[in-house]
Amino acid sequence: MPLFSPVVRSLLETDLYKFTMWQALLHSHPGAQAEYEFMCRNTPQFPLAELAADVGQQIDHLCSLSFTEDELAYLRGLRFMKSDFIDFLTVFRFQRKFITVSTDGGTLQIRAAGPQVHVMGFEIFVLYIVNELYFRRVDQAAALARGRAQLADKIALLSAFSAEPARRHPFEFSDFGLRRRFSSAWHDEVVDTLLAQAPQYFKGTSNVHIARRIGMVPIGTMAHEYMQSFQAFGVRLRDFQQAALEDWVQEYRGDLGIALTDVVGMDAFLSDFDLYFAKLFDGLRHDSGDPVAWGEKALAHYAALRIDAHTKRLVFSDGLDLPKALALYRHFADRIVTGFGIGTNLTNDMGVTPLNIVMKLVRCNGQSVAKLSDAPGKTMCKDETFLAYLRQVFSHTAS
Image (tube, rainbow, N blue to C red; front, top):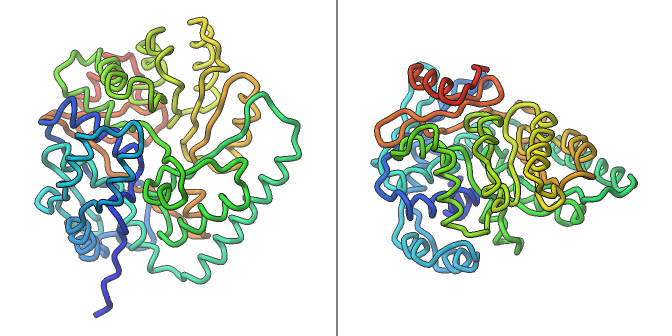
């Protein structure tokens, strides 16, 4: 029997927005119940069901971990983390009873259900556990050789870009690639290489564990699950976005000011993103649909509100690679501050097709929740009645 090799190195090794959403929901809706489901959107090289036993073993290991005093001290040093939340983390452990791993034919099924503040954290760990177990089966030497060559090409592209004329705002990008990375060792190597060879452009990572190691503040604000949860929190459905944004403002009071726009589409978001929110939030994050059209809508909205766009930021994070990021930068950088979160293309560009896996919030407080994406294939909700109602309320056309 091969020796057990744990995937999860630390409970800090998750995306920052897990902590920021976790804190906000613990304070505002500590009793919420939630259900999350795993899904693979593309066809893997072998059935993921073959990984079920190993995934279960890795989740057992995850549930044995707790935060160390050094890790808690690091979190306390982030000014937007509050002392009572850190106190909660001192006694927190993932509970194995809240997550199940099973198979249906060749399909891997993973479901987490229970108190939201106890199950919402599973997502990122589950995704990179599945991903790393899957990629342990490929030729490691060949994959690393290809990955290093691809990374060198990216750095060469940045070097060539540095010769271009300066624009009003600088080009900056960050690593958002934890959930679908090739391995933890490769993730470390990518970040360290970019930090050493492209420090003028590479501004950090969403991975809290790595950010702590390299002495940088981790990057992130909110994800879809935070906004979607408010569809089930007792406010009128039409008002859920404003309720979510208002709770965020009250929780962070000026910190973490990038709002996610595509839970029910950009048009519906902007109708809720009035002068109050537009002044309070530092900018917006794009995660589906045409990024140029999205950015132009954002600029037009700021102009209509008579807000100087040079004081705001657009963050792009949808399936980016460096050429796409640079093209978007050239389009917008003279009109507004930009930022780019690059995920899989940084941490899993290894010559093997990456998995397109997600683990999404599907129910909260016993009722369906959903995202109406601006891109086809990203909506994950089996309740067609609720989807139809949501589309009707927000005048959203099915993708």
